[in-house]
Image 1: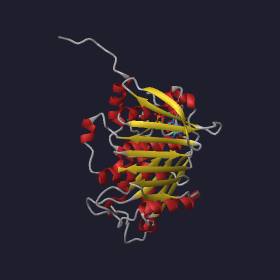
Image 2 (image 1 turned 135 degrees about the vertical axis):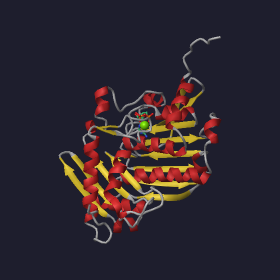
Image 3 (image 1 turned 90 degrees about the horizontal axis):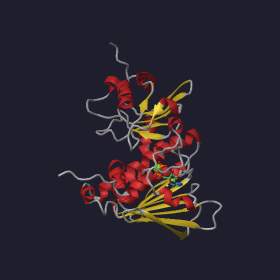
Image 4 (image 1 turned 180 degrees about the vertical axis):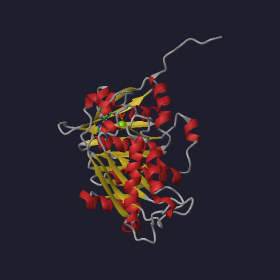
Length: 344
Ligand code: ADP
Ligand code: MG
C-alpha cells in the first residue's frame, strides 16, 4: 500500500538538515563562531561543559539581533546576509545559508539572547515543540549575542551514539577554536572547559599580531623555523608561513589554509602545497603550514557543501600551480641542507 504525501514538520525538516551541518559539538561551535564574526564581534567567550554535550555557550560583543527578528533567526532559510543570487556570488560573510541556528535548535535546547546598541534591555528567544514556535521575553545582557546550547542530540539518539568521549569531543572543539583564532587575530577569543580556562587569545593587530597568533596556535618552534610566503598577482594574494620540512608530524593536524578568512580543507590546495615540498619530506610525514589566500569573492565558490569546508576555485588549475610555485619559492629560501630543489 502506498502512503500519502505529507509535508514534514518544521522541526523534523530542521533535524534532517541538521544531519549535514551538526555532526558533533565542534560543528555547533564552528557555526556559532562564524555568526559572532559575521556580527563584527571583537571578543568571543566560549564556555563548554562535559565536552559540549551538556552545554555550549558563546557570548559575543557583535551588533546583536533586533528583538523582532529573534524568531526569524531560529527559522530555517532565514538570513540577514544575502538577499539575491548575485549577493551569493559575491558573499564575504562566513554564513549565508540561514540554516545553522534552526538546525542546532532542532537537536538541542537552544536559548538565544541578544541586545542591540539602541535597546534598553536584551531579549531572549527559545524554540520549543515540533512547530518550533518561538517565545520571546526580556532578558539581561550587554550589547551582543549569547547562544546557549544544552543537551545536544537529546532528541536524536542515533546521533548521540556517535559521540566520542568528553575529552575527544572537547579536543575537536579546541581545534575548531584554534582554527578560527588563527583566521582572526583581531578578535579576542577565550575558551573554557568545565570552568577551567583552556585558551585565551588576546587581540593582536597587524602583521606582527598575526605572527603572534600563529605562534600561539602552532607553537613557537613552528614560527621560528618556518619560512614566510608572500605573493600577489592582481587582486589575488597569498601570504603566511610554510613549515620547515624537518618539523614534520605524523598527522596533518598542523595544516591551516584560509580563503578570505574562511578555514577550508581543500584537496587542490593541499596537494599544491605538498607537492612543493617534493622529496624533502620522509614518506607518510606531514609538514605544517598556515596559509592565507585573499581573492575576489567571484573567483571562489563557497556554496559547495553545507559545512562550507570545501571551496571551488574558478581557475582551479591556475590556483594549484600558483600555490605550488609560491610555496616552492619560499622553501628554496631555507638553508640548502633542508630544502634542496630536486634536480631532475
Ligand atoms: P546564517 O549565518 O547563514 O545567516 P544562521 O542560522 O547561522 O544563518 O543565523 C541566522 C541569522 O541570525 C543570521 O543571518 C543573523 O542575522 C542572525 N545571527 C545569528 N547569530 C548572530 C550573532 N551572534 N550576532 C548577530 N546576529 C546573529
Ligand atoms: Mg550562520
